[in-house]
Image 1: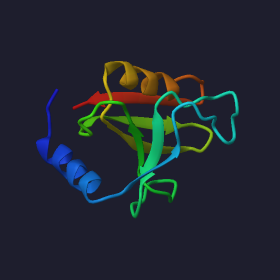
Image 2: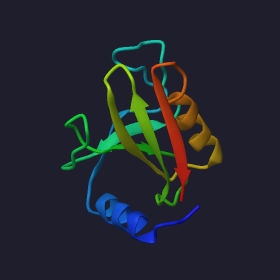
Image 3: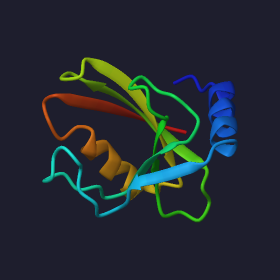
Image 4: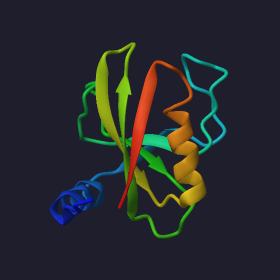
Length: 115
């Protein structure tokens, strides 16, 4: 695999210059799918935009060092869109939980790209 350090550096810069808003804390339920529980803090970067018109989504793990550990690229068949989500401070177990979250149904699939 070819690593593109410029990509990670630009993500670092966007994250460093943005405020993280956690609107779905660990243990909370998805607003549209109440049986879906967030096992890792989920939110977005304020003053950014993504495919859905909202801020760039982030998963924030329990590591003290809040560096970017991975991204997950997702395809949502029902919405017919795609996005990336940034994983910040996630350990291997948390990255696995995020991966499973985005691959739990036949309508959404994701690939995890570790830094």
